[in-house]
Amino acid sequence: MLRHPTRKPAIVALVAGSVLLTACANSGGSSSSSSGASTGVSGDTVTLGAAVSLTGALAREGILTREGYDLCTDVVNAKGLQIGGKKVKLAITYQDDKSAPDTAGQLIDQFNDKGNKLILGPYGSATTEAAAAVVERNGQVMVDSSGADDKIFTKGYKRTFAVLSPASKYLSAIVTAVNELATPKPKTVAILSADDGFSKTAADGAKTEAGKVGWNVVATNYFPSRATDVSSSLTQIRGLKPDLVLGSVHLEEGIAIIRQSRELGVTPMAFGETVAPPTPDFASTLGPQAEGVLGSSQWTKEGKGKDEWFGTAADYNASFQQKFGREPEYHAAEATAACFAFVEAMTKANSADPNKVLDAVAALDTDSFFGQIKFNQTGLNIYKPMAVIQIQQGQQVAVWPKTDKTSAMRWPVATS
Image (cartoon, rainbow, N blue to C red; front, side, top):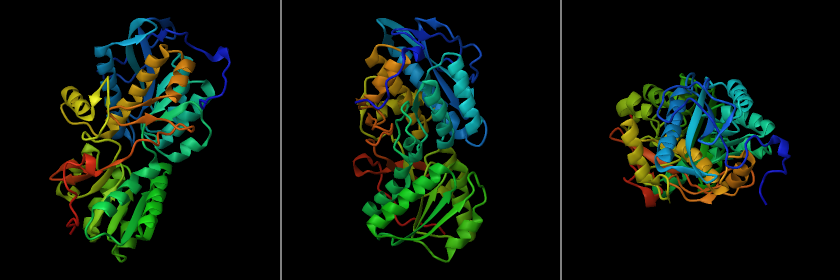
């Protein structure tokens, strides 16, 4: 049985084989405006709406997300999308949510007013949670690319689906990897976390996993989300001399932990963090200080999996490099995977009707360049594992799982 309730025909915004007409947001364009989008129905274009953080505190990750969405439209339009017996174009209408949850929710409403029923998720858990509530109310459908907080999926939403592994797996993956690969094994760990929902959920996952492997969690300290000064938290753990310091963070907070640890003399065997290390700005900003930092990643180019649109993870890596002139990281890959889920669902449904697409998304069970995509009854993808990377010689390399690694994990890492 699928996870959505019976719906009344009155909420059906599109008929089978029909698609929305748009006049903006082509796959390679830089415009974030949807001013040209039409509320009419046409047979040549299907439009997905996306409220993304193009400015504000999460702009760096938001722009990476948009790049992943843009690559999807390029590949799909080059190969040709068949819906309702005809070839149609895929387009994305962007709006800037300014990294603000309230704005994200308002933009989802605006998409709905213009007839955009199929929504690609924003960047981040807070904005995604705000969007999910509006999507549910409006009878839209959203595929979430980066809202990982498990708590989003405890609210009974039936129309939001996350292609990525949940937040509870981010830091716990580093714990598992270190316990499996490190010699000598750490005995103590300190966890530093931002106080947003995603970060706290990831920190809780790490504490649980650390207990399972027999590590002593000597401290769990929280600091304000988006903090650039975490010296107080670091000072509190300095005297405890933990073997491993884990940061449940985003980019700015992750950079601050590493930089200020050096300044304050916090020198564990290694550091591990969520989100920040796989982001290109992490290593370029920190330089040699980034060496040896472990990071949890939703995707690596060494990952297993293949699909007919993007090929293997290595194929996806090559396509991204050709378009953007650099290798992708997981923010882009998970965004493309969300778009891929919509494309697969529309293909299977042979329709862009939002309710038929909803049925098809809920029933997806497919391999992809991103890994397995299959949703449980709450909309979470619990079937795709996390990976762990490490910064080595300024580059991120895959170190876990062993089947996907490109380099041995360095341990211990000199941090003084």
